[in-house]
Length: 613
Ligand code: M6R
Image (tube, rainbow, N blue to C red; front, side, top):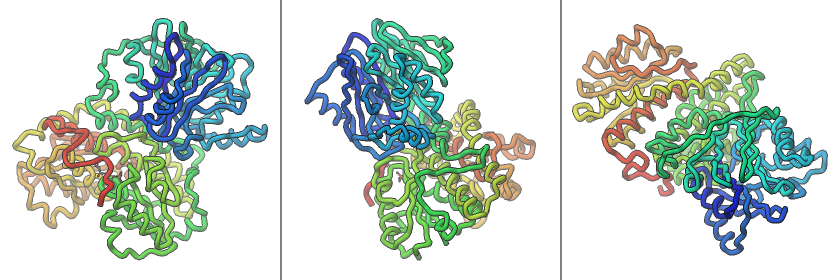
């Protein structure tokens, strides 16, 4: 996730772009840059680190122009550095590009271009776009971009300018947001509304496949084949604060609703269900090593630890590798038996959690290979781990982790499938089936989110005083960690005590807690080997007077008879189900917190990144 801004008109593009990028810094902040055209020449300023560094550079050497594009980066391909900062240009420095998204086939395209002796200045997937546009350029920028887009696979929001056509910006959108701000004698592009609100409230929301040619006076939207596409102009009434949250009341709600896209971003370019193929470019483990792994330790804290607990089921079932999961603050102080065949996987959204970092260092000191599942490129954990698989979720601002968790689940699911195949434990048919299940998840979550209000209605009942003493969350098998995660979300957001339990373990103690005031959230998955067992556990709780809130994927009579509070979710395979079952639990915690008047995005006593022991 990165932020893009572009401007063409009578005012100073640099000012407008810089202020716009400031509003988009939430989308990424590891480097930033601006490109303008002055006297038919490109001028590019880039700097690593937060936007203020670019600001200082521009203050020192002010520049101005009436056209330009800018970018604030959240690294995906290539570490945060000045060379990798956008905008990127072609070798002759006439075409310049800013990009948000991932070009899946950039290596293949780079290799093809290299044969034509093209020099690359960065490690990014984006630079190839500038080279291709230049290659196709024959006095018509729009047509060169159209030809380039035919060659790209992946997602993109693009802003492109060319010194030979200094009056226009070409922009294009495929699976990444891009809007055009419509002004008088000036026009704008941006990744998100807040960047443009000070200048215009009239906006065009581009759709997939749209390519726009924008001058100060005109906006023409076409498709790749040059057919005109008509898009209406919408008048935006949001205030600036609403706009930063994309119209949602809180960042957390926005992040919950982003999950269909962030999950897709995490698996994009890594899974190919039709071909039955997984491709994780960044993990450099030889097949021999993968076959020889004796055991895995997965280590993390809080929500990341819960993702680890889910991964145990995946690594053991798909790849048949014995897996232990540890809380990082415990792992670092015990004496785990580690050797060179032990693989350590650390999971961390921020990549800065002190205990997880210490666990990683311990593993490295014992000679183990290490992998980080991480969201923040360039973070300490991502730098120190031998391999990193990034969850491409973009910055998570709400302190309660939501989209980062589902990104972590997606990443470990892919790793387990890959190793299952490499170790000969999964057939290609099975692989295709599981990949297809994952592929369908974003759509299923989107469907479910249309009825988020149903969860709100349940929260309204249970946020009342007579109920709010304690909650119990029950799950079994791969949904046991989701019960833990649901309870954690409720605790941290609404300050209600909640406990997650393996449903079969309840009768060994916690059942004593159950009475009429105890709400019990139970996760039941039909296609599960523990389905009937779970039903029995629910009966046990009901018999003690507990009020059951069911999360179930089956709209059948058997389930309907178990409780009047049921949240139905789309049906999935059990192994991928945590990606689905956690969504209603995130919403339940969110709405309960709102109803109780708590600070949703910054709950008391918590920090987004825990860098102390
Ligand atoms: O950045 P990390 O993933 O390493 O953070 C780990 C935990 O601190 C984090 O998941 C925490 O539990 C969240 N507040 C949960 O919502």
